[in-house]
Length: 440
Image 1 (cartoon, helix red, strand yellow):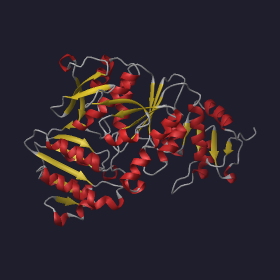
Image 2 (cartoon, one colour):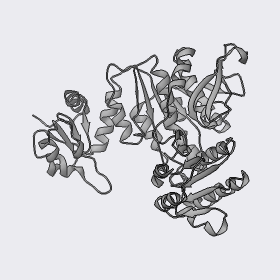
Image 3 (spheres, helix red, strand yellow):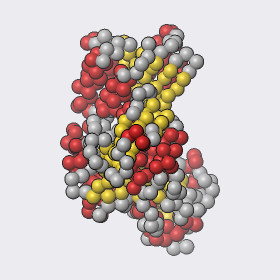
Image 4 (cartoon, helix red, strand yellow):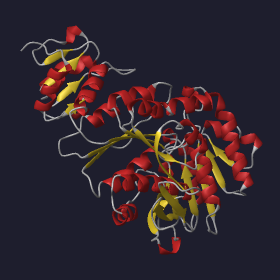
């Protein structure tokens, strides 16, 4: 066999492999195509022969010395090959592709929109948060002719990244959840975050695509000034208008449309299982997308009421001793502020906050952690344990108990035998704050 060097030829082989791709020799699927990606601490070119021996049909490498068999294909760059293959594959389908990015709530929005659209369409969506330069291609390569819609989550921590991901996925629709203080370090401050995240708006404007936009968010509205927009929010006559009716832990709301009945008394309430008033706008975003793509009001309501959060994201967990709001999937200054303010409104006799460090804030880290401490004082939330080196370094100047590590905090809680509390657990992914619930 000659060594296929065009993406079209590699695509034919990929289809022959039943669209199965492997990037890890520990998880080989027989008959699949192995991509020898390089990482900071590994070079998968070295495992190409092993991948074939273990049952892969083909392996793609970018170092010629490893292309030592007819089924090992040499390309100049394995990652670029994967991305080009994903783009080529995506272009074989005529279906709406919606891309989602933002500082907070990307995955929640993706999950809610997926739930709503799945009522009417066979919908492909990003699994977990496979939302980077490898995750986006892997998601696109899961597209089959059965799919009628694709939702692609895109994460970024530096300039140019969203633009690059848009060029791979070529979405016609986009949604930016918000622009806040996530990855300040990589983007170079808040103006950098605005510029980086809004690359999606610029891509869609060039391609004549449409954006779904929270009209009440002035920052987003300004950035999308020249875009073709489908709007949602509460304050004006948007395409979808919402009314937040949340009174307990979980989001309740009503919605209507630009041309629908504006008498709120006649509109049905949507009673979700989603914790945190800050998730109301995410529910409204999913409503707006569903409405635009002709999902009925009843199906939208049903989808949002059935949706159960998972993966440590705004989960409501009742243990034998306590009630826990587990929001330990990630944290940045905006989501931390929203979670604390939401928790402050809770009606509960005994409250406890377990808050972990926020990562990737660079030079802004100290001041942003200081703001969290001030916010706790402002809301008179005195019963808080703060975990991680950033908080620990400030222990002299505040009234809260601090621990250097999550394990130290866990041991402390074992000794305390906490009972009858409502507890908020939140921190960056790397803090693994969810282990604390095991002792509560």
